[in-house]
Image (cartoon, rainbow, N blue to C red):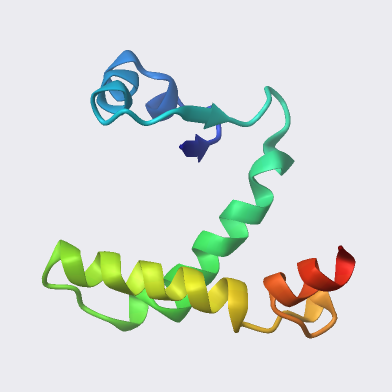
Length: 96
């Protein structure tokens, strides 16, 4: 699944065909609800500042490996002030 806002590049027929070829389901924010995408914008901003901009990637595989490692780090190890100093998974477990 690929979630995005309703930017022109994500609503084009060409992009939709690429998703279909890759058997990827598309999910979009509601019209007029840009806030829906806020958490993902925050995540990608953190990933770029804390990982991507600090490295030079020579292969797609290196980039993919680091993104996967960062997703794990972000969810299980990265403490966040807005979550009372817990990682997202710790916060979710305590909230359940």
